[in-house]
Image 1: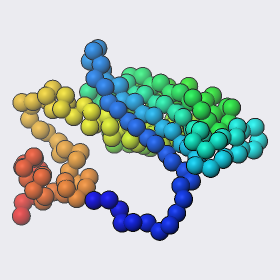
Image 2 (image 1 turned 180 degrees about the vertical axis):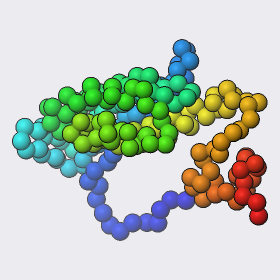
Image 3 (image 1 turned 45 degrees about the vertical axis):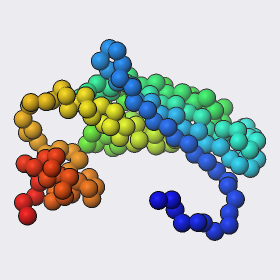
Image 4 (image 1 turned 135 degrees about the horizontal axis):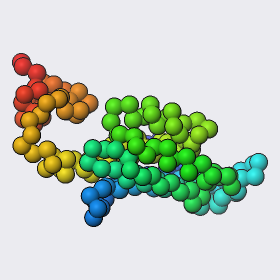
Length: 183
């Protein structure tokens, strides 16, 4: 269902984010994000920045995490094709600091510690949230297949993460009956 009709308005800014997951032939997984910001109006920058015509990217950035099925980061590639300032892409090398991290509890906190603030790029750091979510979604079936037949010894991370997965929901009762709230 689309949103209700809006008030009269004109477009100003568009941010497109696309995140994809890939299974590699070597048993690892690539999770790749692409962010593009454009303006519908001319955009001028001061202090050495570059002016942009309507539709020209203000930001055009890429980020790739290579992970295993335990959600551990093996490699990171970051690239800035376009940024508002000539030095925007200089910080991409810092994203290698994420190698060795595990996507899961504490992921966002550790991101901020390693590449937050002046150690990174606001836009690339923002991409790491959807990259983490996509990593779980892309690898989910493979992790389930790997763990098939093994007893479930800890509560699945999904339980309590949204209203569909509240402990007494039909989804939890069907998928993880041993973890469902008894009603």
